[in-house]
Figure (spheres, rainbow, N blue to C red):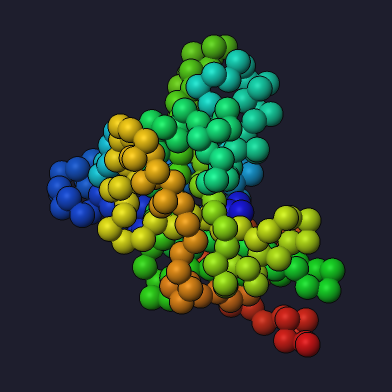
Amino acid sequence: MCYDIKTSLETQLKRAEKNQDLQAMEDIRERLAPLTDLPLHHASGFTHPELFIYTDRSPYFPEVATWGLVPHWTKDTAQQKKLWNATLNARGETIFEKPAFRAAAQDHRCIIYVDGFYEHHHKAGKTFPYFVHRSERRPLALAGLWSEWRNPETKGLLRSFSIVTTTANTLMQHIHNNPKLKAPRMPCVLQNGLEAAWLHPIADATAKKGIQDLIAPLPDGELTAYPVARLRGKEYQGNVAGVSEEVHYAALSAS
């Protein structure tokens, strides 16, 4: 699963910078950046933060969206709030089947750039948070789905997204060992050069299979992880830089 992330304005702008359009970059920083909750040293999806996403309709100029996908068919605010926490993640194997995600999977895919994500490891009845990131600290391009919903009560437009998940690689099989889950999971991280393929329109069954093939665990060796301070409860530091620093727990060293 992926409910906790770390990202910054610089990380979220990496894709936009590839176009090297200085005017566009200035516009993003001045007009869009103040609408986000960046920087996010730690953010829980359950707080529904505002982030940048790169959509199929705007591959290099980001749009601001709320974490927690609200389908276009949502009836009212009550249903929105009921769905919100259940759509932080989208199980990659079923995105073309589930009512909440199938329209977005077909026509509204996006990418979210983060520095890394947090996951909890279970040992001896306790949980220990880990920060997971690329070995060389490059940003992770997470596969996502997005939607726009017009609230019939307020007439306001809500743009939202979900992070696609997949089966775990070896590292995440060890970390994400929640006994309540059927099997360990991890966010779908797009390999370098495959971001454009994720955003490419689906024209036929072959193109759809190409999208499905992208939903796979990142190869072993590309990620590393270490334990960090508590992300829940009274010991939680909040959204501060030190939250992602390494912490040593005696219980993790014990056999």
